[in-house]
Amino acid sequence: MPVHNADIAKIFEEIADLLEIENANPFRVRAYRNAARQLQGMGESVAEMISRGEDLTGLPGIGDDLAGKIAEIVETGDSRLLQKLQKQTPPSITELLKIPGLGPKRVRALYHELDVQTVEQLARAAQDGRIRELPGFGTKTEQTILQAITAHVTKQKRFKLAVAAQYAEPLKKYLEKIPDVSQVMLAGSYRRFKETVGDIDILVTATNAEKVMDRFVAYDEVKKISAKGGTRATVILQSGLQVDVRVVKKESLGAALQYFTGSKAHNIEIRRLAQERKLKISEYGVFKGNKPVSGSTEESVYRAIGLPWIAPELRENRGEIEAARAGKLPKLVEFADLKGDLHAHTQATDGHDTLRKMAEAAREHGFEYIAITEHSRRLTVAHGLDPQRLRKQILEIDKLNGQLKNITLLKGIEVDILEDGRLDLPNDVLSELDLVVGAVHSKFHLSRAKQTERILRAMDHPYFTILAHPTGRLIENREPYDVDMLRIIRQARERGCFLELNAHPERMDLLDIYCQMSRDEEVLVAINSDAHRIQDFDNLVYGIGQARRGWLEKKDVLNTRPLKLLRSLLKRTMT
Image (cartoon, helix red, strand yellow):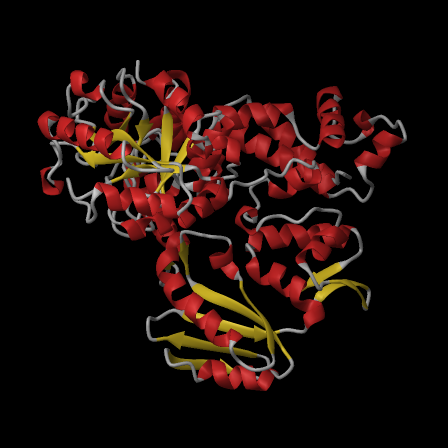
């Protein structure tokens, strides 16, 4: 795939940002920034210069070292230096640079002095008054940062993905029943499986657009008609959810689907690549001048700019375009890849169904196994198990396994991680289990250092298997606790244990960026339902969506393994 000047400049800018955050030599930082500006302003392709054997050191600001790095990027599409810096610095930290007034120098100070890595952690530090104590900041700057964060994150009301699905899917079926409608496609952030969505975008192909508009605005749940035209209408549902419906031509459906799926950042890059090929991409198609080139399918749109189709969940401009160009897009995990679920509860604690019913429901989902992981005694509100009650359940599981066919119950526990890092149950009973899922259920507001050390100590326990819902967040209800996830992930790698992606729509925890970090560190992730009733197994679809957003493949997910292989992996942690 061709590498353009803008591609190289983008890599150099990111290198400069990360170097500055790491307090590298300022002359070195400046060299990368100057080189990026030089490349962006050039009309001639440096890749073509290299192919002609021309010496890049003749360009302003390009010495032997930078010329070598440009050649590397042209040849490989990537930079070893950038890869090294990305491993040294949390990938989410560059998000802080998007906050107005925060340049690399201030981000560096916040990272190194307060260990702030995310916008959420930045907001917490400002609210706690910790930023004002840093040299060069002060109270006024702290308030300015807090206001900038508010402006950055304040958006329209958003709906959790599972809640939005309750409105979007029935509406889709309603539109499909309209005479002369051929296809109805859900787009936007909903299609990208974002954990929350602001509105719903729906695309329709039909022979009679006016009929579609009339039937759409007449939908029973419409509270307000915001706009209505010949091919597009916008309504507000009773729930407050905004829905936009567009009727598009069949020959434009792929282009419209690509355009309205987003994200904005992804689409900007796609249009830039098209411009470099003297093409124009819009929701109506791909054009060369006024001549349509493609647009009936998404595949044809991406193919027109030399790329394979990119899965919607990846379209966030987080490296997916570069991976596509290099032929290195992941083969994302699918629901059918799951062989079981490693986190479920029954009536023994705060669940709603029996062991047998949970097992039979898991079997109906096509699973080979399900782990029963009741709460431990510390969580009294959930009637957590003490050693005696846990041993009683172990016997019940053994008995039931002798009766069930085509499904195996694994013996586990969701044990509380105490404030000092100890586990809530003694070793003698934990040793009798197939797996131990450790969870933080209290003391959410410990300092970053204490919370991190607490979890690290727990993971060092000889019977620790999986870290449950690793950040502890409840979407829109409880912020993640402050913890160094990179250290947690690397501890899991060293210890040989695993992290959970809790698929409950209130959690969706691991975050997508942490899924990607786990993948990069070769730490397996367990996609679990945290089921408390038989219907909760359906929530695994949201866990799969989050895993796909985090670039996870089948091989990156623990519970895609068949039972025999899973047992061998679990056994390694229980020593």
